[in-house]
Amino acid sequence: MTTIKPHTSLPGHVAIIMDGNGRWATARGLRRSRGHRAGVEAAKRIVLESIAIGIDQLTLYAFSTENWTRSKQEVTFLMGLVARHLRTEYDFYRQNNVRVRHIGCLSGLPAEVQREIERVTTDTADNTAITVNLAINYGGRDEIVRAVNRWVDARDPGEHLCEAELRSYLDLGEASDPDLLIRTGGEQRISNFLLWQCAYAELAFSPRLWPDWDGGDLRRAVDDFRRRKRNFGGTPIPPPERDPLRGADALQGVSSS
Image (cartoon, rainbow, N blue to C red):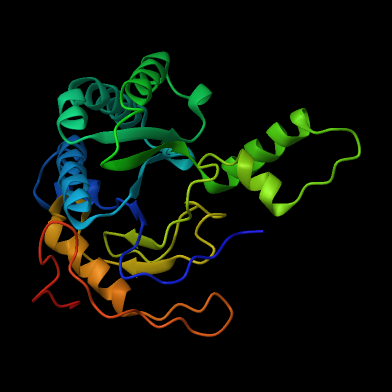
């Protein structure tokens, strides 16, 4: 059975569908690859802002199981970008005490990407400022199927699957579910992202394309989250009195518009 946490003033876990890189580049007459590079820089800004606010976990949808249908040229570029980013940004993770985890089907990725994922997850395992879950070759339906198959391989004869047991085989394991799911770029769907974990997540949709996102955008989304009442099917749990965020007055003077 899923444990429902009372509403606190701050989302402990934020998940983001980082949408709009290609459209950002096209609008500027640039190649789509420029948009993906700009998207990496936006991700770094949001990681730093998440640490400043005090968010414990950040899950970023970097490459979906459906993204393989894009052009071979774009897929090849994206795989190379992922590998280079993981390899060259180690100082960023170390200096900012960032723990990196991977969710998704690792075996379906190119060998170079697999190596870089395994290296960075091992090297950052003891970092404590924030956990960043990178969803690479990830799909919510695929995750559930992989989890069930792992359970089938491990189960005892006659054992029946329950919610808690299945959860332990999901990519995020016993990590807390996202409190807030954000999608940038104007679309309003969850696109096969964290289908199990986002059963009770608050949803936020932003028209701004991902490469344009900065700390102010994240703070506005968090500020809106703090105003909501969450009831999880029961009695509404009102948001608490506003309190300062870690490290600064954070949301003071920031509207949700």
